[in-house]
Image (cartoon, rainbow, N blue to C red):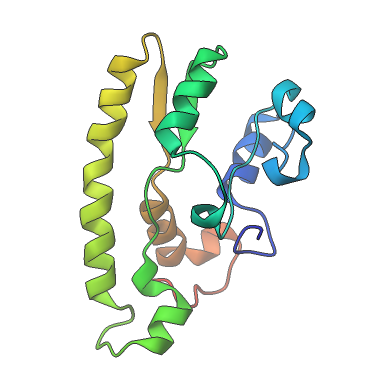
Length: 155
């Protein structure tokens, strides 16, 4: 399964802003292409947990061994309590299902320490986390500044 969007994802916008080529989706590349692509690859997928792949930390160690030292990680979770499917499936008194967002916030709060520990283990590396929760919050609080009229289902 591909990304949960028919448009671009965060991973697509970063190279655009930097003037770089888009990283290709990993599932569209052959094994040989995966080893030789100079742009990196996009691992984003709506069913990434179901894909037969090693845990993220093992992927990072593997890529580190190949020479990578700078990593941008999609390391936290967006406000899942604001996803339309959850809004319509669960009872709630606010614009989002807050108990889900509280669990997401707890999980997201654990992640910065993981990045710090990995940077210490991977000598000379830089790991930067992409804060998806904050990104969705910003977009939904100021949709016009992102070219949208409104933000349905999020915040």
